[in-house]
Structure formats: C-alpha cells, structure tokens
Length: 335
Image (cartoon, rainbow, N blue to C red; front, side, top):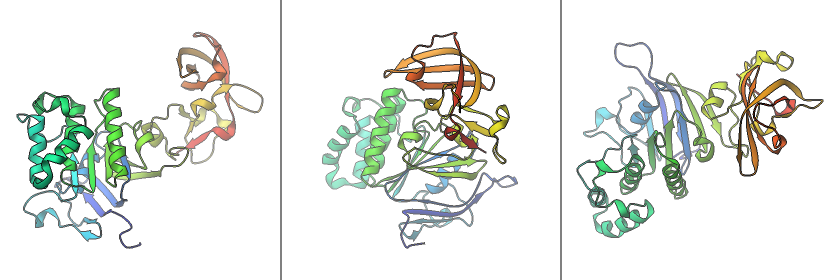
C-alpha cells in the first residue's frame, strides 16, 4: 500500500462486551480518503454507532490500530481525555449545552480553537450554516436540523479532517435535509471527509462516494459510486439503498441463476409486455402519481407490489389491469 494513500486507516476492529461471545464489531480493515463521503448502512444493532465511537476515540478496542495521516493514534488507555484532534463526532442528538444561546455555543468553540480570528470566523459560520435568526435562541429550543447545523459549525471551528455523523437525516423535513446535504457536499469539496451512519440509504444514493454495509458488526459489502449510482450484489444492500422492485427469484424460474435468490427490476424498465420480454404476468394498477411529466404507478402482482415510472403508462387508470414485462438484460440478480 502506498504511503499516505489513505487519510484514515483502521485495522483489527474486533470488540465484544466483556462476558459475551458475540462481537459487536468484527472488521479487519477500513480506510477513508480525503474529501470522501462514506455511508455506513445497517439495521438497528448492526454496530454503526459503536464503529463511530471507536473512530472518534470514545470506545476502547483492544489490539485495534488507528492511523490518521500516516500517524498511529494512541489508544484510550494512553490518553487522559477521549477523542482525537482532527476527528469530530456529531451524534444524532448533538452534544450542545441546552442553556447556552446559539451565539454563545458558537463563541465557546471558536475561542477554544481559534481565539485570534474568532469574530471574523463567527460571521462566516453564521452565514454559511444559516444561523443568523437563531443566535439569541437557546440551543435546547431549536429544531433537530438547526442543532445539527450548529454542531457542524462548532465542529468546523476545530479544523477537522474527518467528521463522523450519526443518523443526521433521521428526523428532518425536506428543507432541513436539503440544507444539511448541501453543507456536507460543500465541506467535502473543501477536503473534509465524512463517515455517516444510517439505517436509511436513500440519502446515500445521492451523497455517498462509497457505501459500507454493516451486519452484526461485520462489513458484508462495500460499494463504490459509478455513473449508474451503486450496483449491489446482495438483496439486503439493495433494500437499504432504497431499491423497491425486489422479488424472490422462485416467482420466475425461467431466469433463475444458481447462487442468486432475489431479482430487481428497475422502475423505469418495467413496461407493458412485448415479445422477447420476461413476462411478469397481469398486474393491477393500485395507485398513480404524476411528477415531472412522468407517470408513476404502483402495481399489485403475483410476486408482490412493483413500481414503474415513465411515459409508457400515461393512459393507465387506477384499477385497470395490464400485462407487465421487463427485458432480461435489465434484470439485476441479487444474492
């Protein structure tokens, strides 16, 4: 491996609660490059928060190794205080003093890390993170999205190289999600790396450069962004990423392949059946939505609920039936 190829390298991350056999974390190696956005996806209990706490220097993992910019970081047993300079952790409920006003909380961080230019930077951060209307409100009274924007501003005061985010989009409305996504993209463009843990992969499809799948403490799949977004091999990964047309392969034995148990049909490839297509059978149109000039349909089929999008169904009406199909080359086989 080339020297300093990675901003962060962690090895031998194996951790179990004393007295229990099952490991909460069992990962041989992970690596993070500068300016990259990585999503770690998994169900509740998959080990996502434990992984963040380890990387943030708040969970002691015996025999693990953590390297930042080519420098081995000390374990918690060698430190007086938890945490590492250059790595910031923002929890789902950020660590803010609920009795401080927003301006006071921001001042507190800026004066610790950069007292010489704190006034000028405060003006920049207030504008960048849209905090002007909140400065005189107490941090305990503002919304979850506003607290996360404030926490990002406070984290930036410490000049981090990596920011770890725990479920940052979990309870935000559309406007809040958009604001937070823009900030993450802007900061990544400035060279800051992000590791974001979530159980919902819909945001990852747009924001992530890489996706890691955690299952019972293990990394079971790692994906790199391509021009077609992400192409998972496993049905569980596809589901976490928001793929909806996932069905059991036994419904269509003519195209089943050994080693694959699920099929995925892209929504825009689901069409009225024609010769040469895989016949998905008759389907009843249950719901129709119109958006951006396209027709979006929900279908009830023998294999379950399927979704389609595109102009091919512009004249369909709710309650009507139609024979559906998909070209075999458009089918994803999933394990």
